[in-house]
Amino acid sequence: MGILRSDRVSGLGGANAINGSAFFPQNTYINVKPDSDLDLSGDFTIEMWVRNLAGPDIAQYQRQLSSTGYYKAGNDGNWYFGFNKQSGNDQIVFFTYDGTGSEEYLTGNCTSNLDQWYHIAASRSGNTLKLFVDGAEEGSGTVSKGLDDGGNNGLFIGGISKNTGTSSWGDHYGWISNLRIIKGTALYTAAFTPPTGRLEQTSDTVLLCCQSPGNVLEEKTGKILSHNNHNTGASKEVSADRLAPDVGEDHGTTFADNTKFDTLSYMVPSGGTTAQRGRGTALFGGGYKTPNSITAIDYLSIQHGGLTQEWGNLSTTQLASGAACSSSTRWVTAGGWTGANNNAIEYVTFTTQGNSLEFGDLVVGRRNTTAVSNSTRGIWGGGYISPADAGTDSIDYITIASTGNAADFGNLSGAAKSGTATGSTTRAVFALGNVAPVDVNTLEYITIATTGNATNFGDLPSGRTGRDNGSCSSNTRGIFAGGQYPTSVNTIDYITIATTGDAVDFGDLTLARGQMGGTSNGTRGVFMGGTTNPARQDTIDSVIIATTGNAVNWGDFRTAKQGLNSAASDSHGGLS
Image 1 (cartoon, rainbow, N blue to C red):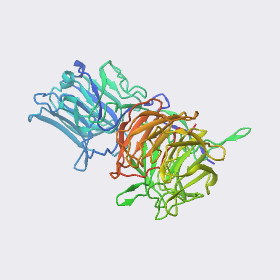
Image 2 (image 1 turned 135 degrees about the vertical axis):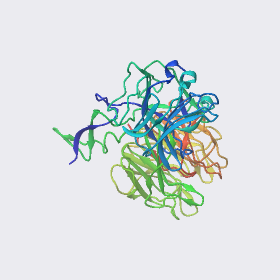
Image 3 (image 1 turned 60 degrees about the vertical axis):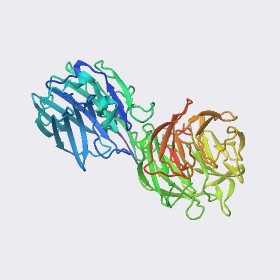
Image 4 (image 1 turned 90 degrees about the horizontal axis):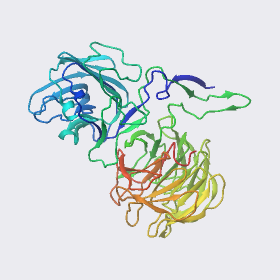
């Protein structure tokens, strides 16, 4: 029997809770407009909570805040502050430098593990500056400069300003919460207990931001904040988030283990704690890169993008071209190539990182199949079978919450391979791909809760096939992106899932490619990896499903690879 307990869950509105933060994708910043309040000529306190991630181009220098004129010759009052990883050492740093040789700085050795919250502070009284991490004093020294550059040129949140704010000497990649600057008072002059709730505006507060879960540009003292980015595309911005330090008295109800409520009957809440669920986590398994296929399972936060991280490994060597589907609790992958066409079905749970477990077997072992699901059923359609790489018209299904072998669902209209699929809570739509020997643009659908053969839905646009697309969906709209053979394309098309008919142009990917993965959090779709035939890609693109328009770059895979049909999330459009 599990337990039902009251627990601290950040963001649920407890009396002293921190309930918001700002997430900074790599190369994204926030500018603070110049204001005389930001002239820190005397005593001051700068504090914030910081949570760093490992970025694809960030080995060190993950600083969080600077004046905009930093490193400009003659700006004697410029400065920066934050964590620093240099030559393998973790440090907290405050540095002021005029660009010509006059500098004052203070460092302190500290621990700054990735993906962990820390409270950091810089506090000056007179000419004595002290640095703190989680209330512990990590450095003390003299910084006597006037530090007036924030008043003259503004502030740069998310890195060290370079070229007066058009780029950065060192990015922050991750979260910042409750950034506050107090002018005229050194709050911390010795070791202290970090604040246990959201920071509040006081009479001497001159900046208070990065604490709203809904408006990333909200600032409590009237300062003007704006988005900034460098070499990332105009639509990539810092975003408001509910991920925040778990401090104070924020109490929420947490379900753990196999909790049951006894009433006239009882209900069983979904697995995982409330803190673990609903995160928009996407998992990607297997794939192919020269010279080998890979067993790695990667994960990504769809809302935030960035660099994928390691989740675990597949237990069988599913090379390229397996396919995955999911409920909100389980990710299930099947098929692929292990020296022969594979029939293994494996799964992981979204609440537990680690290697996949055995689920059962497909009715027909194959590769280059496609998968789709709602919260109850997972379905695989088409794919290569032996001998002679023939296609199959088989449709198999499983009940995701159980384990066991797949059962026959029905058939596609032809022996199809290298297609893709998308769906809502009730309907799955297949783009057939290749029906040997011809690549086709045919779309067919099934009703997921029943069994039976697929029915014609419509077509992709003329001249476009369904071969090696990436796909994703909301509960109303399905998207097919890219594709390959004989030439890679960047086209994105969409359908209204409940209404049969031909697909309509949506926009373009940032890069023409096929054999990529696709999934969504129900609102934002992501397309990752793939090949431009023959070059393999690590690019992750993103679209907002309810709109139309071109994709934007949203991050990168840890390694370039193709054959990524094993992509699914805990919140895609097939889940209610």
